[in-house]
Each structure stands twice: as structure tokens, then as C-alpha cells.
Length: 484
Ligand code: GLC
Image: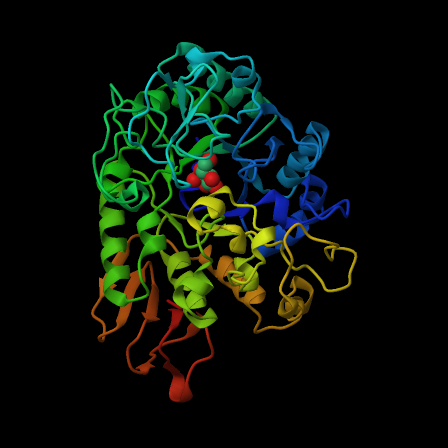
């Protein structure tokens, strides 16, 4: 089997915000088709599309009401077929999202009151929704249903074989349409601890996410589902990547391997602070855990749920340095649309325009990383009334403006992706000054000066995340790759 995914750079498309093909202010599949050439030039191996399925869009499409169709706001199945054909023609693989933990409350099963497919109880327990407030909502007859997310996202009961069969069929539906894989939403959530025990702890449970085992996440039974899926994936040569928030790299590694999934996002890396010791520790522990199961590590710095890494780290310079570090690591890397333009989190969106369902209950919102991408200020691909407004200064950061500027973040990403193809082999750490990390891969040396003094460079610099200092030194918050 072709192991393309082991080193792949996968670009996440948030369809609503990527490119608007019909000028209605919402991104769509026609818009995506028009940008496949751009993605090809960027040099990505695959795209992952966040949900574009029929949905009330209460949670940006992670509330699916028909898993086998395209929401009219994003286009049609025909648009999807044309898109995937063109992507494949350019050598770009296509991964789609699958949302198995919950459906939309507009899904025909929920609307028809098919309770044995959801989790109904006479009394709620103390579980909280990830989006704030209780995870249970009462219905007319007095019973309650579980929703780990919004009340419009009822959790499915995965102990019901009908649910299992349905999702195997949904996988086959998209595989038959030619998809190369799936990103599995809340991959750690489908199985709940027997008896649904209360947690009996003060404070928001979401704070424990990824730090402790909760009775609704990372239960052993979930692995059985992936062992059922793997033969289906294998029969099409497709892959799957897990979104699983678990407490350790060892627990994460249980999702990947020859009889389960291929990849699992490394959120420890994404959440690590910008300092040399944190990076070193998370890289070491992640590589070690993945190696045990013979799987690659899957690095990521930004996605549609977290503040963009420019804003998390506090500067574009740090973000570019971390990106160059990530792209030099063994394994696969996921990019989030717009990071190649150096976009920052939009923090000052008017509250009334925010759509994240978590905002109303927690005051925290993920809208700021979902603002539509600036393609050009006035060209045919400029957004008219985008569903979230773009900051005025993005007019100077458009893809068009960056196209011809050799020092632009866009051209930096293009160059890094091109050079990355020449990187191979295991990672070997080298001694380094305080605040600096150095390693060797194959003949290349990779250096990130996180917060050290000026680092003199020895050898030919292939790429650096910022201009070098005087006397060919690497300034703080800068990374570089050296030629063999
Ligand atoms: C995942 C998605 C997120 C969504 C949630 C519920 O965490 O990435 O966007 O809100 O699942 O489906």
C-alpha cells in the first residue's frame, strides 16, 4: 500500500471561510475548485475539508442532518465530484470530516424520535457540555438526552448496532465517491462509561479535557469501532486521522497503528508554549509513543477550534519559526487555511456576529480563526459581504499582495514545502546553546533559536523563517534549515 500519508502535508479547508465561488458571502465547493491551482502551487499533498454536509450550521456544520449530501450553501454532490476529480488530477488527495459522536437534532432519526439511537435517560447526571452548561436537555415527556456539545447535537448511542452499521455505510458512501480518507471528529467520544457515572467535581469539566480521563472520553470501547472501520478503509486504500483529546501521548498512540487509525493529531505540540524545553519535551514524548506502534506523528499548529498560532505565540516571527520547526519534524503535518498568509486571530469581532455556539454560554468563541481568507482586495475572488467581516488591514495581507513578494509568508510556506521533500530520516538531537534546539535529519541540520542569544550559523542556509542577523547569525524567534 502507498504510504503517502506518513510524510504528507495536509491543508485544512474550512469550506465556509475558504473561497466564495458564487458571491453570497459563504465559501463553497466552487470556490474551493477555483483555488486548487493555488493549493497545488503551495505544495500540499492533500486537503482535509471540514464538514460541508447538509446541516443547520448551528456548530459550523459539525451538526450534520444528512451525512450523504452537500448542504446547498456549499454546493451539490456534483460540485463535490468535480472538485475531487480536479484535485486528483493535480495530485492532491482529499480527506473529508466524519462526525460520528452526534448528529444534528434536525437529523431524520432524532426528528422521528428514534430514541434507541441516542442517549435518553429519566434523570441527568452531572456531565457538562464542552460548550458550557449541562450536557443534558429535557424533552416534553420529562426524559433527558445527552449532548456533549450543543443541545442541537444529540450524542448517538454507539452500543446500538444500527448506529454502527449506518456509519460503516457512510464511510463507504464517500469512499465510493473517491475520497482518500477521513478526519474523525471527537474520535475519543463515541463510547461512554457504563452506567454514565457522575464526575462529582467542582469547576468546568472541559478544563480536564486531555489531562484526565473523563467518563465520556477515551473509553477503551471506542477502539473496537476503529478496528471495525480499518478493513473498510484498507479495502479502498484510504486513511483516517483522529481528533482525540487524551491525557498522554501513550493514550493517543492507542488510536493509531496497523489495526486502527493511521494518524492522530498531536495537540500537545499545538498547545506547547513557545519555549525550547516545552518543544523538546513534546517532540521527544510524541515520537517515542508513535514509534511503539509504528505510526508517524501528526503535527499541527492551528485549526478551526483554537486561536491561530500567530496570536497564541504573540508574533508572526514566532509563528513562522514554529512552522519551520514543525515542517522539519518526521511525520505528517497539517496546515490550517490562512496560516500560509500569516493571518492572526481576529479578536474584535462584534459579539452579535459571532456564531460559535460556545460563545453564548462561555464567552469563549472560535469565530476569530474562522474569518474568511483574504484572496485579493478588489479581484474577482474578493469577498462581498463575507459571513464574518475581514479586518481592514488584511487588504495588505491578501494572497494577491503576497504572491510577488519574495519575503511574504505565502512564499515562505511554498519554499519550505518544496525543501521539505528533501528532508528524510530519523531525528537526532545535537547539543545546543540555552534557548536553542538543534537536530539533524539525514544530512540536514535544523536549528530553532527560541529565545537564546544570536546563534552563529555554520554552513549553507537553505531557508530561514526570518532574515539572518549580521555576520550570518540566527536571531531569537527564528528557525533555519542548513544544507547537507
Ligand atoms: C470537534 C470539532 C469542533 C466541533 C466539535 C463538535 O472538536 O473540531 O469544531 O465543534 O467537535 O462536533
